[in-house]
Amino acid sequence: MSVMHNPLHPGELVRDALFNETELHTVEEAAKRLKVERTTLSRLLNGHSGISAEMAYKLSLLLNTSCEMWMNIQRDYELWKVRKKCKKLHIAKLESSHQTGTN
Image (cartoon, rainbow, N blue to C red; front, side, top):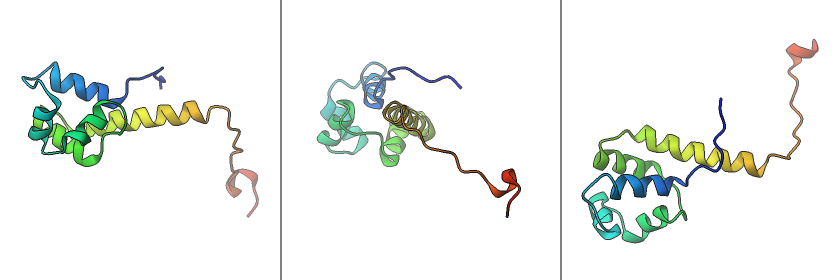
């Protein structure tokens, strides 16, 4: 498994999909099409929030993509952040009783 270095925030990918690949030109216009508040979409596009399951569903309908694609992008980004944050944590693995031969 390869680990991505400094991935884009999911909102940047949403911005690209909405404004570079469609006829949409403004956040307000996109928000209306997605049936969300302009501030909700703006927060996502500016990296202040992530892609919720509901937003993933709405994006999939508007952009003819899958919900899973958007959720996977969000998941991968969150895991990257956690790995970066917790890189130096030393958490000892638990041993199962099957491995040690004890009950």
